[in-house]
Amino acid sequence: MSSAGPRPRIVVVMGVSGSGKSTVASTLATDLAWPMLEGDELHPPANVAKMAAGHPLTDADRWPWLETIAQWIARRVEDGGSAVIACSALKGSYRDVLRQGVAGHPEATLTFIYLRATHEELRRRVTTRHHKYMPASLLDSQLATLEDPTGETDVVTIDVERPPHEVAAAARAAIG
Image 1 (cartoon, helix red, strand yellow):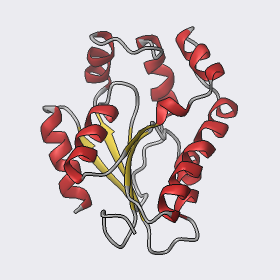
Image 2 (cartoon, one colour):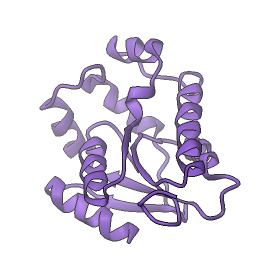
Image 3 (cartoon, one colour):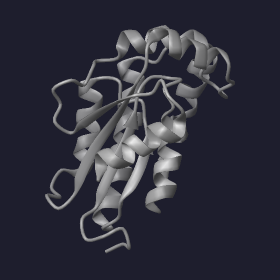
Image 4 (cartoon, rainbow, N blue to C red):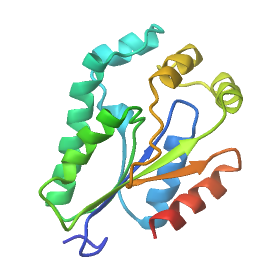
């Protein structure tokens, strides 16, 4: 077992581009002394090139990427470790793929932290930052793909229209 405790815990910080996934996940991982996975780092080169060219990903593009993240989760849980992951997880079916990472491990928990913001706030954020391959033009396609996770019992929704350290503190409080 890892120093994180006897029960492996996986926290997926999710939301569309500009919601603050990486910032919140990084802060949360530091606060908890858990490793963090930036899900974008597992995109295959073809996905990165497609997004960099301003083309939205399709489900067919995302499935292998999500399965890779689920496999990463499974390895972490099998080793008895906890982790924080930044991943858009836009659809319920995408979240279901990630949930497979803890399948067969009743001692493990997986919690999604959904970072929610208004379209106006997200637009402001993505137009004032530079992402290596996620142009602001893809925000609308992500919002169109997003399935609100209301009703999913393993999802905590946090509004992000406040300073990042407050959002991270709310995420920390939500997972206990």
